[in-house]
Length: 294
Image (cartoon, rainbow, N blue to C red; front, side, top):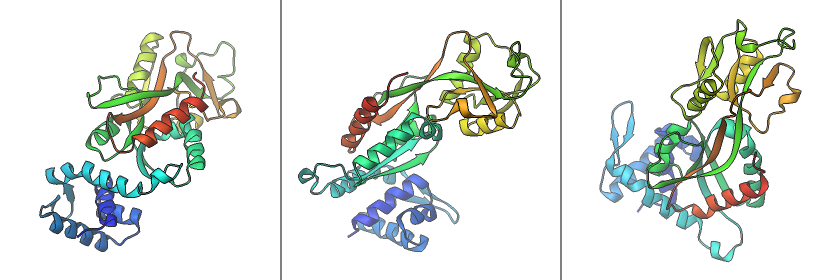
């Protein structure tokens, strides 16, 4: 019969869609990880993956087992937890890289210090991709921006903090002139990807301030956009990340726009019922107590 390590291996493969990547995470060779999955399928009596020579794809049987196996692993990791005052075990969180650069990064570090037996695994990505992974159960929860669309009834989003959308542009002699207008300059606009949740906020900011812009590049990374602006390649509208020392950056200038301020709201996305709610509740409480609202 398969053991708990095999079940953890299965969950790792569903997150990475790769036996090799999952094997690296759990400290096995790809061959050993593959053998464990074959044994799990033999024990259950069902194929959990559709296989070709070059790919391994979770099938309907495999998807249906994600949540039950997560529950088994969580219950195993929680053995004896009623006798302990701290949280332990593993929670798998999706996280925007920009959220880790913002206010959430500090809170995450404080939680780890308070609960050293709690393992937090972070998967980087985009808010829209995390929604599907939370619904499927491959993620316990995710730190995402507020969705511009109505969420499915089985998930909930709790606001943790918000960041104003700001204009950033290169710090040059021309930009330091009192009458300088970056919108009228010859620099192109570097846009956050339009079809993302943050991309919708950029569009709202442009429209609410009635800006006329010259389109340039389009990226899906706030940190990459900041670096391109530092290099003098254009200007952009991005969220004002909390943990960046904007005033000390010698290569950037930032400006609040004169029209209506649009905020990027960042929060915790989770299913309304899941097996790691004890941890997500602590994350929400700890964050809301330790971080002032903007």
